[in-house]
Image (cartoon, rainbow, N blue to C red; front, side, top):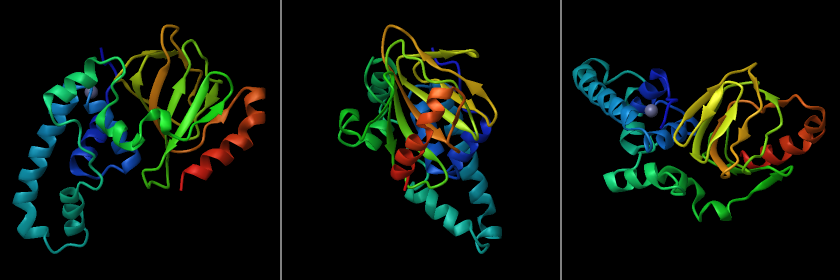
Length: 229
Ligand SMILES: [Zn+2]
C-alpha cells in the first residue's frame, strides 16, 4: 500500500501547471498509483479553474498570466496521469507495468534506455525532460543490492515503480513518493525478492560518503552530466 505522498505544495503546483517537468513527471507517476492524491489534484484544478475565471477580468493584462494559461492549456508542465480506470488499475496492480508517464519517457521501453552500470547492484538510465536544473533518471537496483551510502546536496524525489527498498528511515513500496533533503544521508537497500526500479529527480549530484564510491565520483559526474543536457 502506498504510504508516502507528495506534500500539498507539490500537488498545488502540479495542478496549476507550475511544477518544473522533472518534478512534475514524478508527481504524475505517483498519481497513477494513488487515488487519494488524484482526487486532491482534481479538486485543486477545479478550484484553480474557478479562481482563474473570477480573476480573469482583473489580471488578464498582467505579464505572465497569459503565458501561464498557455502553459496549462498546452499541458507543457502538467504531464497527465493515466486516463482510463483500466490503465490505472493495471499500473496499480500489475507487477511489472510501468506508469504511462514512465512508458512515455522510456519511449522504446526500459531495456532500450542508455544504462550506465555503477558497481554490481546499481544501473542508471538518464532521462531527458529538458530540465537543466535537475537530473532525471531511472534507477535499477538489483534484488538485495545495496547502494553506496551517500549524502544529498539538494532535494531528491524518488518514486518507486517496481519492487521495494528500505533505509534507516523505513521501507518503501511501489507508488511511494519519497523526498530527501540536502544534508540527509542514507543507504537504500533493495529487498531480496525482486529488483527495485525507481524514477528519480535530483536537484544536485549526491555526495558519496564511502571511500571506494568517492573514487568513482568523477566518472559518475561525467557520465550523468553528459546526459543531462
Ligand atoms: Zn498519494
